[in-house]
Length: 79
Image (tube, rainbow, N blue to C red; front, top):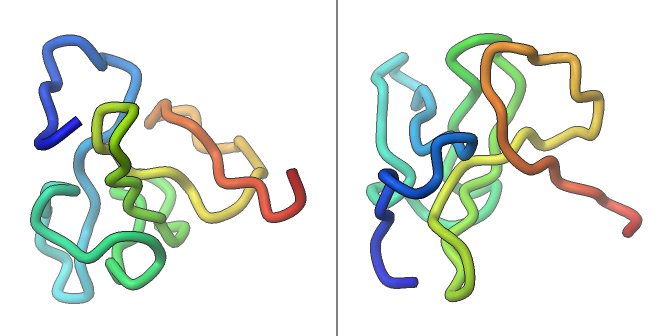
């Protein structure tokens, strides 16, 4: 998948807040934790996922799943 096509990924989060509290798109930041973004709803660190198989999106850096405002995949440190 090159760039994100959000029409077909309504449950994936394409936006995060950068260190200046600006809303940024996942396509405009470095991949992984290097993106330096947090969740707009719960302020947990985000991981930018920009792979080749799925639509680009952010995932929470923990598997707490307590953020009910933003839905996406969660990073698992120990799969």
